[in-house]
Amino acid sequence: MDFYNYESRVNRPLMAKLSELKSSNDRLKHIIFSAQLDRELLEHLASVADMVRALSQSREGCDFLSSLLAHKRAMLYFTQPSTRTFLSFVAACQLLGLSLAEVRDPSVSSEVKGESPYDSVRMFSSYFDVIIMRSVVPNFAECCSYLMNDLDEFNHRSVPIVNAGSGADEHPTQALLDIYTIQRTFRFAHPKDSSSWTRFDELRQKYPALTRGLSGKVYGFCGDIGRGRTVRSLAQLLSRWNNITMYFIAPDHPRLRLGADLKNRLLDAGVRVHEVQSFDDAGEDGRPVIESVDCLYMTRVQQEHDKGHEADAYAGADMTRYRLNRELVNRMKDYAAILHPFPRDSRVGEIPTEIDNDPRAMYFRQARNGMWARAALLAFLFDVDGRIASRFQKDFSDFHDYNVGVL
Ligand code: CP
Image 1 (cartoon, rainbow, N blue to C red):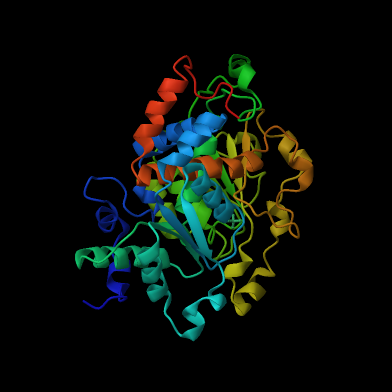
Image 2 (image 1 turned 45 degrees about the horizontal axis):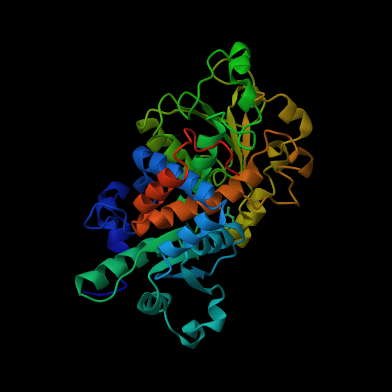
């Protein structure tokens, strides 16, 4: 076997790859694609995340959580810049007691002496129990999961790989926290998750079709749709719910608009897909899209993926039409949620700070949810989610709704 030659495996259809990413007990072994997260697992991880956040409110709960994986070590291999993903994984590891180390700058590792990134990853697997990695190189995390599987086959040490963002390709744990944020928002159960939590019945008088949950909702994605790895991952996960409508609001530019592969996947999943170029274009019901969406996912133009000549080509794309402002937000539904994976680009201003105090602005909550969602994922990977549920039931036996009183 030629270790490190994965091209033919990468080029297979996505669905042909998924079984290799599971362990023998049918749990996830590696987290590489959002397609690995089915609706049942997403609901389960949301409930584990709720339990982690509830337990972490007390000293005793924190002590319990941090005892769960105190015998495990995590390597964070982030060679592409990150604030939220890196730090929320650090915090998630700390919550569960994992000790951790990081390589963020390969120029201070032995890669400067000619070591290949694959040899680096194999070395990490010698010392750590999970490798959480972000790279500019598309498919690199996927290839590392094949490396681990091959090592396993030859009875060498092998550990889980978690994809924390790969090129313009996928960002599955961002999609996990995005779904978790939308799940909490559309439960209409807590003031910090939904501006309208006390007014659900009143809202239904104004919006008779409104229901709790993700099904039957209208989702808008705005900005750099073509290269937005968070959009790719989230849209695929949302397609697991029923009766979903999606608007992709982007310039009619070959690199920025919705790609054919994602569009076809969503159509195959039964999503009603619409591509528009303005918030004011008419939606299915004839109203402007900005007034129709239940959830608006704003994105930044991903200039870090540009090569010189491509950046020049964007000069013709007028991105000022893909910025929110107070007037647009005022036209949105009272309960609509505004999300953004962040960072937002302060030079472009796709979400100006004047929106931040609007109760529909969920993006800071969304970032914090990343810590709970990633802790839930790590607990699931290491099979301690059942212990979290048992402890939660013991400590919170009087609670019938996880959300009440949860920060
Ligand atoms: N959303 C996200 O991935 O943010 P960072 O690039 O800061 O990790």
